[in-house]
Structure formats: C-alpha cells, structure tokens
Length: 328
Image (cartoon, rainbow, N blue to C red):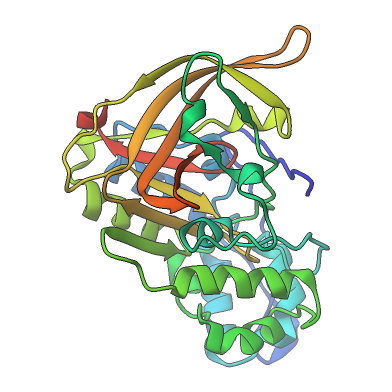
C-alpha cells in the first residue's frame, strides 16, 4: 500500500463556495464570514490550552463557513443530499469520488488477531525488539487525510453499518468501490464491542475527540499529546533501536489513549485505551547509509497477544497519543 501524505501549516486557507439553496438550483447562498475553523481552533484553545494542535489535525479542520454549514444542514434534513453530493464533498473537502486503495481497519485486525489479509510484521513488532540493537520496520500506513465535518453536520449522517448503503448513495460513492469496502471495514471496527479492560470510541468530529479525551484522562492541565508524523518519510524501511526508555505507567485507571485515523470519506478517529498498556520512548536510526534518526513512541498491550507473544506498535503518521502527565 502507498502512503498518502498531506502536511499543511496550522493556518488553514479557507474558501467561500456558493451553494444552491434547498430545492432551487438557480439561487446561491453566500458562505458568510463565520468560519468553522476559527470556532474549532477556539474550542481547542479553550478545552486544551496547554496543548498545541498538531499540524495534521489543524489541516483537517473543516473549510466550511457557518453559512455553508447551515445550508447543508437544511439539505440533509430535507433528504436532498444525494442531489448535492458533489458540491457537498468538494466544499467540505471530503473523499467521495477519488480512487483509494482498499485497506483493513488495522486496529480491528490487531485486537481480534485477524491477520488473514495483513501480516503482524507489516503493522506491529515483537516486544523482544524493544532493546538497543533491536530492529523495527516502519510500517506503510495508508490513510487519506481529509477534513472532519463539524459535529452538527456529522451527527446528521448515520454512522452505522446498517445505514451504509444509504450513506454511500447519499455521498455519490459507487457501491463496488474500494471506498465502500473501506467504510464497511471502519464501521465493523467501530461497532465491535470492547473487551474487558478496553475503552473505545470512534469520533467523527474534532469536538467529539476532545470530549472523549477529557472524559477519560481528566482535566486539561494534566494531559499531554504526542504525535510523530515525520516517521512516515521512511515508511517501509528497517530501523535500529539505539535507545529505549519505558515511561512511567501512570494511574491504572487512566492508561494512555491512542487515536488512530481510519479510512472514511470524512475524518474518523478510533480512540481506545487498554488496561495494562506499556509506553516506551525510542530513538531510531534508519538502516541505510546516512540513515535518518528519529524520536518515536511505542505502545505494547500485554493483555493482547498474537500467538502467545506480546506485540507493539509505533505512534506515527496520523496517529495521536494522549496521556496524563503521570505517564511521563
């Protein structure tokens, strides 16, 4: 699978796109000056004042104006989204008609030990490699990076496998396309019942992710965030572990909370925590002449085993790792 990378600055350039009103394709609605991005950035600063928003999250904030949101709310409530699917997908920067590769929802693959289509070594590595001189393959992660919808829009679109055909049709996506298969895989992962000791949620908005993180980890002044998007520059290459330090385990009732991006027409994060999770800070050196050096973070879930062995994964690409400061 190929890696899709889109790195933008924290400031997102926004465009106002004229939209037809419900039931009248000749009239247009001016998008307005109230930008959703400004409100979402304000919400982030209010709820997480000590945490800088990652570049990739900032780049995925909705480009819609509040006027456009109001128009699309009316369109969706009026049952007319299919007639405006192209306009909606383009204006909201969604992934509807563009070709994509088929990929499994890898979080589901890991937690259910289902490796019929993907090998563990393609995504995870043995805990035995967490030592100086250990070797880790930096995985190729495929997750097209498109915008989140504002919550008042995403809540109007069913996020359920039982409504998949309705959503696919409404967004103008071909039923036989890879995107439909990816959507189904994502919904299967999101709808799986968590096992004992696992807390999980699939969030379809930035607002939802912030609320879930705060509800699980406590007040914002005690929360930190890690991400390592630079690692994707050497995807598929082997790297040598030159240093490994285990972080403090922190409160047993507040394990680290990783959020993984899953493939869907709009932004979806699979956020989950597993009791007993161990966190490690790594220094990696890519195994090639003048190989790049990276700081990295690895998570190991001792309670989740593959053929009896403990496996770990890196936080890289578009994944986020939330944790309490007690986890340092």
